[in-house]
Amino acid sequence: MRTTVSQKSIIYWSVWGLLTILCLLLLGKLVPTPSDFGFTVLSLIVFVFVNIYPRDSQTNKVALLGLTHVHLLYASLSAFGLAWVYYFFGQSAAANVPSSVRNAIFNSPNYGKAIALSSLAFLFYTLAVRTSGRGRIRIKLSSRSENRLVTKLSETQEKTMSLILSWLGVAFVLAFLVMMLYMLLSGRMTLQMSYHAFMSSVSSSEYYSLFILLYSVGICYIIACANGPLRVFGLALYGVAAFLLLVTGNKGEVLYAVLACIGVTRRKGSKISLKLVLGIAALVFVLIPFITASRQGGVLLGLNNMSVSFIGFLTEVGAQLRCTTRLLDQFDSGTRSFIWGYSYYNPIINIIDRFVPFVNLRLTPPASFDFKVAFSSWGFNQIAEGYANFGAVGACLYFYLVGWFLSKREKIEDMSNSQLAYYGSICAEFINVSRNKFAFFWGHIFILTVIYLACKWLCSRKRG
Image (cartoon, helix red, strand yellow):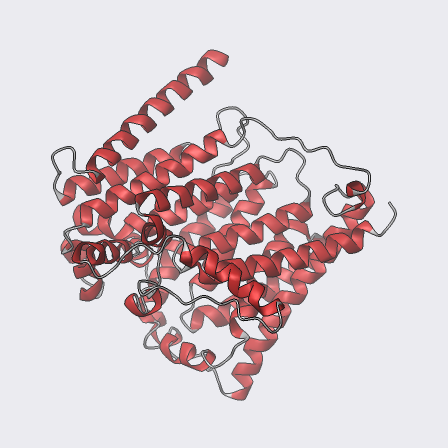
């Protein structure tokens, strides 16, 4: 058995090393540049390699479709999906994609560089996954520290914690559903409205993003901690709210949490069942392409156009390479310069500024911190944002750190349901930021952490 594991490791690291060296040589233009089709083939090879065996060779605690893998799978599909359709299925297969998106990707002189950069980032993600279990740092806690939140809850306290998070999850989902029903009854929202009309309606609400966060967190809490009738009730509430989101053209708000919940379920030990496979297939090959195609005119008005579309899913999810190519083009033209971590640390300073009276800590943004304007309505991605901060090192470092964090948590031997609920909700935020700017991330993590620690503190006061 040891020989088999050793052989697999040798093969893995040999392939990883060859692909990494190739990507570095292509980025540095130290080898002949292949055609765009050749770069697309490289992206497919890297995608298969990083997703086919997303486990640490020593612990095997990182499961296929677990917390760590669902993030990598979504991020890599969002980077490469449209390119595969365009070059492997023909340009006509991508004809429904707006010309501005196609031009930004396939007419860019940096198409190959964007592919190589994305591939390298995902290779570093798997590097982190396969090395995060090696070596442990043990910290001896003082007797005073042992009474703090860093200690593990007793069995009785953990049961109480799981029950609290279960009810909190139901309350969060219910709160979001009540908000959506209020919008429906007050006329701010209709079931036939387009996605653009819906977003225009909620843009004036400063609390909508908070309710979306609670909705995502709530279902993670329910899946991780709830049992029996409470779990069924919570899932029913989530389903009704998901229906209201989907008929108004909102996909990501549902998809990100669903992916995280799949990771939570797999971490709890559930196997990949036929029911799970069919559910995922229905979501990605029927629901998402249909909503994308019909949401501008109203989803319910286009029900007769619903069909199965493998290509439709890839063209919808896989268009984020557009942000990377445009950003690289801007660097080449001299209209953009590195911002040296500003987009990552500035949100932390803004959070601190809210709690420090009489002193303005907010920083003046650099000229190149213009993602909202330069990429308006395009979303963003963390390969592009990492590069905007520190170049190729920034993109690789970001994915290495995320891969290390998620896999390190997923490998915890005796993870409790409450811990899984917390890390599952963080995973949902990482998936969300795969297609968005990083600006909101720290604020959301702060809210999640305060909720989790407050519940843990209350439970730690109970003797058990």
